[in-house]
Amino acid sequence: MTASTRSLRGTLFVEDAEVNSIKSYPGKQYRLRLQSPKCAAHATAGSFVHLQCDASIPLRRPMSIMRADADAGWIEILFKVVGQGLKSLANKQPGDRMSSIGPIGHGFKTTPAHRRPLLIGGGVGIPPMIFLAETLNRDRHNWQPLVIMGSEIPFPFECAQTAIACDWLPQGADATMPLLENWGIPVKLASLASLPGTYRGYVTDVAEKYLTSLTKDELAETEIFSCGPTPMLKAVASLANKFELPCQVSLEEYMACGVGGCAGCTVLVQTSEGSAMKRVCIDGPVFQATDVFPDC
Image (cartoon, rainbow, N blue to C red):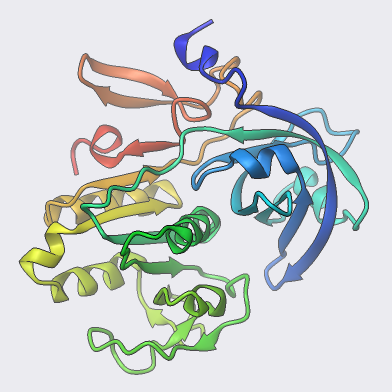
């Protein structure tokens, strides 16, 4: 047993989670709320849950936690139907139960000195950014975050026109996520699919425009947090390097056990002792961008 595996003792919980609600969105996307009190009490932004989608499907599915309410005992996940497992998950109804293991993984770590966190999420990488935004909103520290989300299918929420002024993006790029804007957190949306109110381009295009608008002192207070497809994360890491900013990335990999036993989710990471294979499930999923993309 490795040190990473031993560190999971007392932090992982196997629960018989109950479906509270499930809501569908365009593009075969679903938001699922599960009653999972122990997981909800210990989840952090960037951690995930391993779900048994159906008794007939042996392998579990790792799902990023999008929101968690420790007092009410629920967690929320967002997923897009790809394959039989997630198709089964989409057919769940309130009152249905499923086996859950979580929360798993090391999440994002914020630093008060970097009070201007820039959160960048793409596609299935959106949920951890929402969780991190909610975590910042609950904190009493004077955070001034910006959230940028990208998608090539309709966003899994009802967009609204922003009421938060922005002079560094073209007019018309004014769609926002109401949940976060109600917390006072500005949100900018990007897409190449010409979705209404979005900036036509990549999330990194929006991020570069924002970072260029900041003063030297404001940049010194900025740190980037990101989750999404690997090519997007690499582009984010390159952008962070260009502006000399610290950057944390949450990786997405296929995995079987989800608790470090199978080593099926290993990635090459740079450490102080040289290159090493690290497991995304328990050594991550959050890593320093420079450790994963040293050539950016």
